[in-house]
Amino acid sequence: MIKSVYKTRQQDLLLAFLKETKGSHFTAEDVKKHFALSDNPLGTATIYRQLEKLVIDGTVIKYFIDEKSAACFEYVGEKHGETDESKHFHIKCEKCGVLIHLDCSELSHLQKHLKEHHGISLNPLRTVFYGICAECEKKN
Image (cartoon, rainbow, N blue to C red; front, side, top):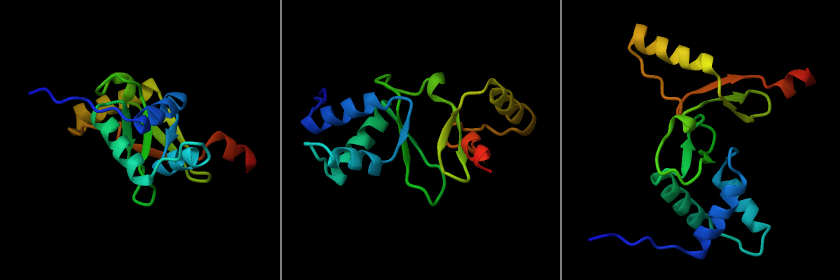
């Protein structure tokens, strides 16, 4: 038996918003704030439920930055699954908290080294480096 895909207006609104934010990180609270300001507010439970469905089908990636922060999401498109493009590292600024994509070929060398010499498989979706971003460095 083939399971039918049930589409709702809320799903369509959320997907339209996510497509606008492609390449950016957001929390469920960010989504809630966006829709609270619109003519189409979405409930918190609806937002979480829809985001989790999108995570399962690979349209959205869910990151856990640390124990104190809310889960962070990123819309990667309707690719349905992880690709090498979606496997990048992140760095979180210790001053302002911004989360930055870290697409650096040097990190793939580190990842390979850890695997070959230490037997550790580094998961880029769960690895976050900490430091100070350029904007915060300028302020100091």
